[in-house]
Image (cartoon, protein in one colour):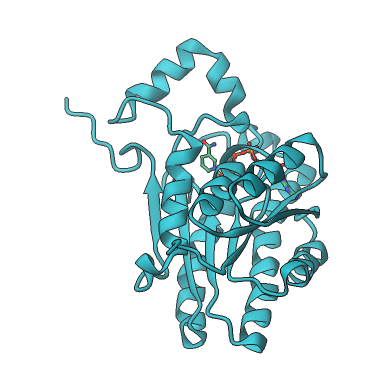
Length: 256
Ligand code: NAI
């Protein structure tokens, strides 16, 4: 029997990068998939085909998750597609580099609204659905090692991911009574379009790798494997946690 027999997952921000890898991995393990992004384009089209070729159902819903009402509506629309929803992966996220004293209100709002506010209200909408329909839902938030460790010149991003840490801790307590589990996955440095500048800069990349005990960048598939575990019944007793997928970066100690 497939790990996710008769299960349906919504993965936000899944046209590329970690979200796309999560969609493919969950589909491989037997899940039907609802993809999301700002706009449906050839990447979404290709993913739908790949998922259908695995014998699973797939569709794409457009939504700008920096807006609370769009995040709420996305859940209602997702439930309507296949009549059911079991797994919510809040993956969509943005980051912008700026020294703290130069962060604009516009950039602060974009980062906080996408990485935290949209996630907050998509979870609220999903929880309302689960309670009404008596679904034992599972939520996975794509956090970051920066829910825990500092990242100078990314203050708004760290603030948003730090908020996600406490949101998950808090909701694990509040939602357990409905049999809803919620966990964070915290990637380290993963080779995706969000890190294109780093990947193009050999010198900077070398410095980053020095701080990673496993001495390589993560792959989107490394992250997706942990998401699949947390979404599955293998993690039935796991809630309110953060799983680091960082090659050892977060708690790395450089011996002198
Ligand atoms: P990415 O930039 O390749 O993908 C992010 C996706 O989210 C894109 O498809 C983008 O269109 C979508 N998105 C952004 N804002 C959106 C909005 N308002 N509405 C709908 N979709 C939106 O980035 P990547 O690397 O795949 O990141 C995915 C998640 O993982 C993010 O939350 C990011 O913060 C987190 N992460 C990534 C790390 C990395 O090294 N790549 C490290 C730590 C965390």
